[in-house]
Image 1 (cartoon, helix red, strand yellow):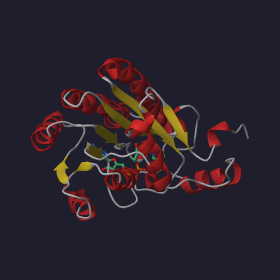
Image 2: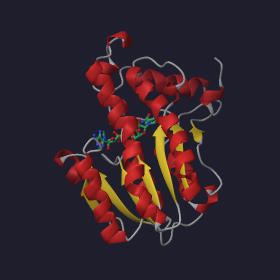
Image 3: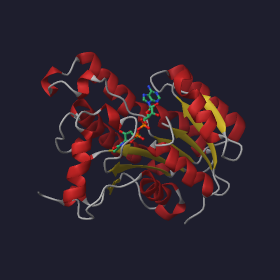
Image 4: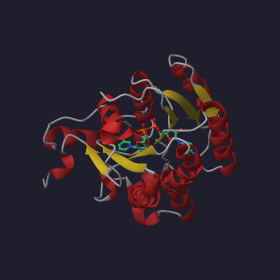
Length: 257
Ligand SMILES: NC(=O)c1ccc[n+]([C@@H]2O[C@H](COP(=O)([O-])OP(=O)(O)OC[C@H]3O[C@@H](n4cnc5c(N)ncnc54)[C@H](O)[C@@H]3O)[C@@H](O)[C@H]2O)c1
């Protein structure tokens, strides 16, 4: 696997050991990167501190991605501690429980605003914060996570599907904007995985079962497989790849029925 030795990265979106962002953190650390992990609120601080205790010299910082002052503090701290930044892993997403259960037509203005703010706008805000630090390193790689619900309808995915469509478009616009600075921006569209975020989606186990039956590989994927694909995009192995949404879903996206 290509190396991240001497590189520094920011990992946003670790809630617990099942988080996709945690699998990426482990892979990036094993590839030699120094990491900063963030936690959203005191509720998750202990989890993230316990997990990151196994990493080499990690930074652990609070970050709610809807809070511009906290975002600014994170990048100030990264500049002080790392003197630059090589990659950002954006694994934050949120939609209110009712938005993931009620009929889509009942989506509220507040629910829509919150889902799009946390799950899509935050990628712009984090990229803007990372920009001067990545310029110091002559470039960088920014990675986020999407789902096929951005293009097709899945039961109860609702406003999160709209947020993922916005997120994927955001990836392309950021890639165009930041490409001349040698900053790449990509997404991995992962197959369904039982995580904390997924537990909020009604009927999620049915979605898992459909993938097992119909995906070309006849199975679901796990977070370590997503993390290995992430390593391709974060390291020099993916140095010519940007504005991409890489499907890591056992091929399910290719099936008609
Ligand atoms: N699990 C799946 O089936 C699946 C499939 C495709 C894509 N994804 C995406 O992968 C990413 C990671 O999700 P996951 O499945 O690992 O679940 P997860 O619950 O482990 O991670 C989601 C993270 O978002 C964070 N978050 C929510 N609101 C935030 C805020 N305001 N500020 C900062 N952080 C906030 C949570 O703290 C949590 O760490 C998400 O974008 C999710 O949509 C998940």
